Length: 366
Image (cartoon, rainbow, N blue to C red; front, side, top):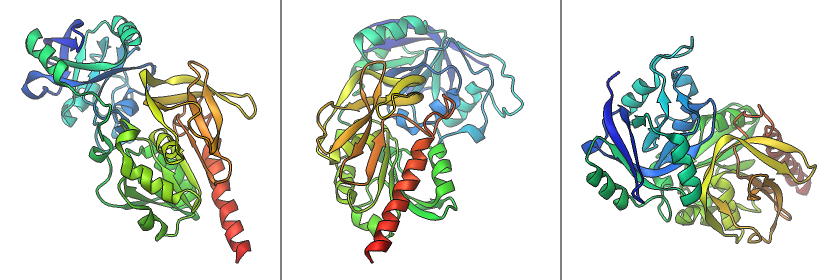
């Protein structure tokens, strides 16, 4: 594997030495907003999560790539992250399922990586200074500094438009009908939904009228990248769907539903990215170990029409909402993932029940 000496330069001028691997960055420089992820395994699922559009992923676990990659574990067609940052890249992978190593997989998809980085120092810095734009590559330090300073980050930018499907498509064979908005949907979500329904996945800008014409039993709002305030067209559609059909939102879908209910969102200093975040379910006091990937959160006290159902035990961030008078609920974390290993799988069962109750009520009303 060919590596070249390189630098990682943050927008505030902080510099790290390393080696480039994966694809050669355009013009020798890769740019994006740096965030850190605390997973111990699952690096391939993280890298292929469309929610990382516009961002570089710094893994806190010191040894990444030891079990290689396989297309079976991809969460999307291709990774859309801007780069991968690791302490030590495994030079040799070992797993019977693997079809490629991590460096080769990144190279094939046109994603650059930088290894040899002191990720402990980098993580401490981001925790203190917040997530920020950066640049890495074999270019000069001054060129990298200029590129980092020019990188706009993710706030106020519609990143969903770059990851959503261009045309509707259908998956699953369950007994119900679900329309799923693709704001950056993961294949694991479609796996769960496909067992309960025939799922039609639609582009992020699909109007509410087009969804209701499909006569769904429920509407699913997927995860996705970036700032919910930049996706006003989705907020408008969700606002028209609430009360008309049961709604279940995850991650960005949670933030968009909250916004449609009159709530507001804000950017967190360094976000929640990892597979070990404890969340308390306020109904029974139980604690779920959750997978999370978001830089924005719903502002406390801003959603009058819904009750908070879950909160983060790390920082108190709202992790779940349930409408009082409408068949709709959402969570900030990822119940389709399995870090607990499946502490949050009951949420899909809740969605099934909500759809069945709504269908029964409609039949009774006739």
